[in-house]
Length: 326
Image (cartoon, rainbow, N blue to C red; front, side):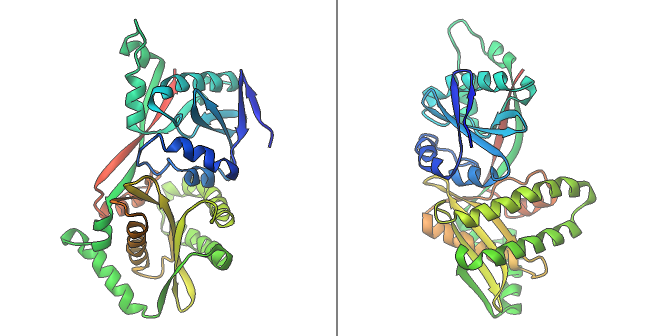
């Protein structure tokens, strides 16, 4: 794919070969949002065009939809370089876009937001800086103590323990295997299609259209995950009952303290399957990465998903922000 030249900046195509470069800059940004990894962005960009540039010694990731560009993350790099890079990135987006309405920076962590809004040039007031930008609160990531998800102690998790115990009694011939894309890819795609049909059946009608709009992106992301599984440094497991795939899940390490779950799909008709798989994978993430926390991402605005994630009693909710320029 060709590069983009906007103003004096060359935007290069974002692909699997960009991994090492992006991760170099991610090391300078110690945050626990699920969006701040190479894999999270590479997979979900599978149905869109991604571009990047090194601006003011920060890694800047852009997404092109139609002819308009925006940013999937704020500039990644040392804190002292980020503020100038944000200003330059808005100039690039505005020079390309038909309206500044399309120019925005998504998934901004509050640490980066604090640095930006506290950036005061001599003779500039905070009011003047905020007068040029709109900061909008978006979704939250749900973060749990890994021990809570593994041990499920106390009355808060009584229902979860019961569901897991019922699963183990009902399906004695279950097997958990390490995910191997060479072996499991076709079964995973089949289960995903089954999950979609079941999910639509039980989904409130008001959410159905928005849900279906995202299915193509998720399906393409899963195919890309299977293609580049080993290169992405992720880990995953599959759950079988009588040699039939009933669930799979994939995750990764975000930083020294936190791992994340990128995707999880289970068979709706197998009661307790989701709860069992979630606890088993929480054990693996905790033990493999020695992490204190597990981030399961946001709820995408779906009320049912919010209820499920809240039922596991998150330790913290991390707000994600979007920055617009007026």
